Figure: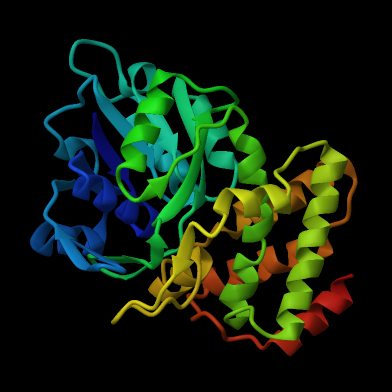
Length: 334
């Protein structure tokens, strides 16, 4: 199979680089300065064993390919706010032998949140979801770092909305050869909703910096508890903290990488790169949406969503709000 990584940033670049290192055929899709760096200097993947350089085909979109093949796997790794544009671009692309990408090819959503799979199902017939446990960073064009060892990440995957098929297992087998654990599960959404609860702290980290003080951790606990109340009211199942601990089981330890300090998660990185957008609408905003649908107040998640969106829109750097200031606003909100 050939893997086409749509969005070769932190997650996509790490998955693409690791697959290439395991002998898989990989094409990277990127834009702007990142595309130029990948094209000119290759993908520089910083991992515990050192900096690895992969000179892979890189395109800006479907027009850069000679065409799609029946053995292609599309891996969607853009931020959720960019999913619709990517799906619209790739769905109608012809596949050799007949049909389109939307009709014939598997689309693997390797993203935070839960919304992209629903968007994908409007166009693509064969959609797979991934619960992404993959600490990685992309703030410099052409460079991606991932500090996990001995595993780079743990990627639960399955068909969306449920089940698995032969393609799921083939993808999992390729990932297992590439420094990942890739459990195939019939209920991938349960794992993604559990990860969503963890990701509710992304906006907090982006606004105030690392969540390492007692006050910051206490605020995150309140934000997560609000999320759990919403999921429970909505009847949405999610993997328990104990299930998550068993799945990880000490299989991935983060180590310092020379020249690649880990500053923060995906939302922190978006602000660091000054992209002008952030995932908060599909992380904290998912809880706000479900809360409104099921009559559960969500003042804390609504606050984080609003502030993160403002920081992104104004292209403010991460960490420009103090924890004390954010706690005060949270107390006022509810």
